[in-house]
Image (cartoon, rainbow, N blue to C red):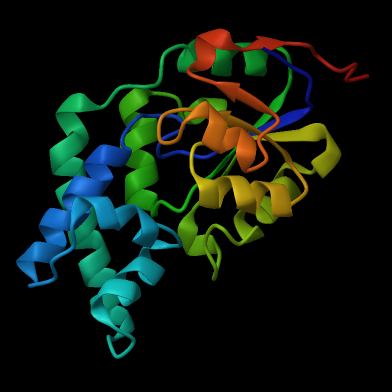
Length: 219
């Protein structure tokens, strides 16, 4: 697959790393500690929005901001403890990021993750320096599938949406990127090719070894 773009915005979880099963497992175990039981097959429908939105979804609207923050950090610690020994970039990721940098294609990150989770992945893979702009979930009020996080990242990158591609694995992320006006490349870590195409992705990849670059004239 050949990409022709001046900027590419990546999601993080499920897109830079194949970690969604670890997030789901850590949520289920974490919630069980508080007497909240959710079956694995029912979790994906609840897995969207910012971390704060998810805490409220499971613990209720009456919870204080301080408690939301405390619970969110506890959940993220549980996830990091579970995933740390398995942390690995999707095949071809680092080489692809290097090629983007060499070809002067801007790169952004648009993730619902909190700063500690972003640092955990980017520093763990030693790839933070490849991103021109990073937007995390704490910077938006409404998380994916709302397009705010992509719109904010496009603004930071100072690019036009028509010259920008998003890479996403989730249905909520695909919708958010499309509603922001971006073309979307779907990656099959979480959903099938058919599901991603049916939800509006322009191209589908299994990993980054499948991507080549067609560079626009930057002059």
